[in-house]
Amino acid sequence: MFNSIEVKTTEIKLSEINPDLASFKCNSAVSGFIHLPKKNAVTVVLDGGYKLGAFHCPTCAIKAISFLCIEVEEADKKSGMNYQAYKSVFNAGSATRMH
Image 1 (cartoon, helix red, strand yellow):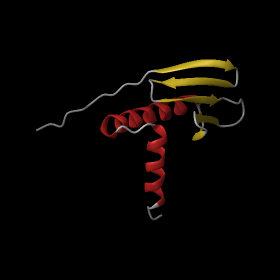
Image 2: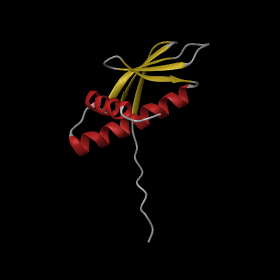
Image 3: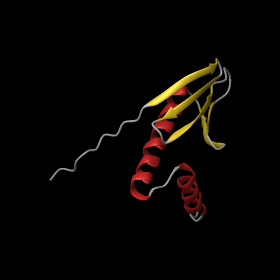
């Protein structure tokens, strides 16, 4: 009785705008910009003005984008939720948790 493992993949298209800024599109689910300053954290901003976060390296930023893309695609398959709807539900749920 072994559990099966499901491997999911994403495709991210990066386009350099200048040495500090690149745009990205992950499948058709998530897109936005990656700010890569020389001295500060790498920042990812999604289309719609949502800040995904600040990361210590570009690799971590790409991983976070990939994981988000997979979650949004799963939400879309299960309930027809795009990123804006996914973000609203996530924020509503996290606001009700006790810390």
